[in-house]
Amino acid sequence: MKKILSVILSVILIMTFAVTSLGLTTIAVKSIKLNSSNVKLQVGKTSTLKVTLTPANATNKKLTYLSANTKIATVDKNGKIKGIKAGKTVITVTSSSNKKAVAKCNVTISQVLKVAGVVFQEDQFMKTMTQGFVDAAQAAGAVCMTANTSNDQAKEVELINTYVTQKVDGIAIAALNKDSSVTALKKADEAGMKVAVTNIALDNASFIVGGFTSDNKNIGAGTGAAAAKFITEKLDGKANIAILQFKSQVPDQSAARVDGFKSEVTKLGDGVVFVADQDAWLADKAVQVTGDILTAHPEVNVIFAANDGGTKGAVIAVKNAGLSGKVFVFGIDVDPQVIEMLKSSDNILQASNGQDPYAMGYMAMETLIKCIKGEDVSATKGKTVIVPGKLADRSNPDSLK
Image 1 (tube, rainbow, N blue to C red):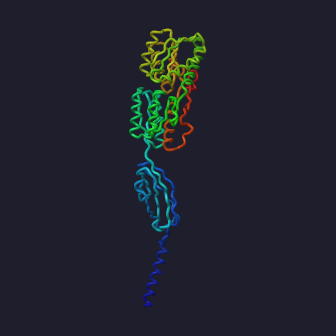
Image 2 (image 1 turned 90 degrees about the vertical axis):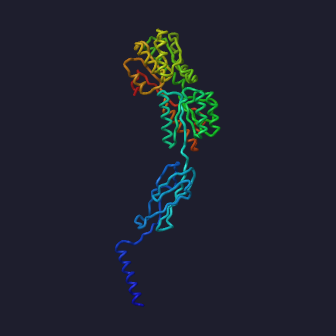
Image 3 (image 1 turned 180 degrees about the vertical axis):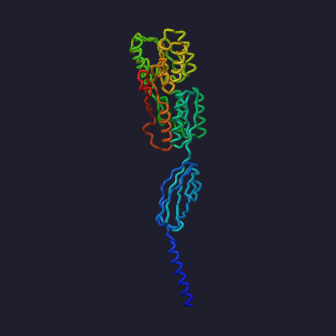
């Protein structure tokens, strides 16, 4: 019996020596550290936990991952977490070699936000604003639907109501009218859909998360000051002016811009006469209307257009009429096409005071999503934020860069 025990002990000693010599000694994991103890994801999105083990030379690095609620979030054997539905759960990571080596990660899953960005016409200004909506939503991980009311108040109401029915989380909208638009938007807010507005200052709208627009009178005045300077220096202080508005589309904005323009040029006194005032806010229409004005009023030598489409259409009409160097255009809004017109040797467009539609759209959507997420928007709640514009003037090459 003693011989048998002696043999067994000898075998054990030999095996122990062999394991030690070959470096096969088991080294257990003592602790687990995760790259994050809190993970926030949207439904359908994934994130993979990164793990640091101590000691680094642990021989058994196998881990198990467990979600406390797989209806909220799942986790695979590699630590990849996937959001299933809105809620909170905990992911527990445990070492297979040491059940006391445990790390936990709190996981919050949120629903993908659905927002809408709405404009009222299909020109470059509104396309640029729409891009601001989309980019801000994308940066926040939200899905953005876009739409155009086509200058139709009934369609605006219909779109707002449709988004409420679809349970869209919020809407950023270039509203058509500071009075009639409020009713539908207020009802939408009461139904739980957050509202931000652009390109307009709404009255009695304490419910909006913020409004982002230009000061339309100041925008018009900026162009008016450039026109007054030009009339004084180039036209001996005398001008017969035609105006292109968009008063039947968005009357308040149009009137404010025209008033701002007039407030500057009328400082020149009796030498300034307004001989025509018509609506034409889309380029094609403005070409036609300007052509008719130039035929009916050959004395016109200055045209003020109160928006992007009117500005471009007026320039084209003057060129078509062969009146380059005789009739001069001053406008509102700046984009690459307007800059090229200001650089053109035809010398028609002299200055255009630009709004920043991209910033308006981006800021409105960004604030809207912050509000939906429960972040503080008290600085803009129920208020209008003025987004600065910039004058592009042919006489100042640096302004055309």
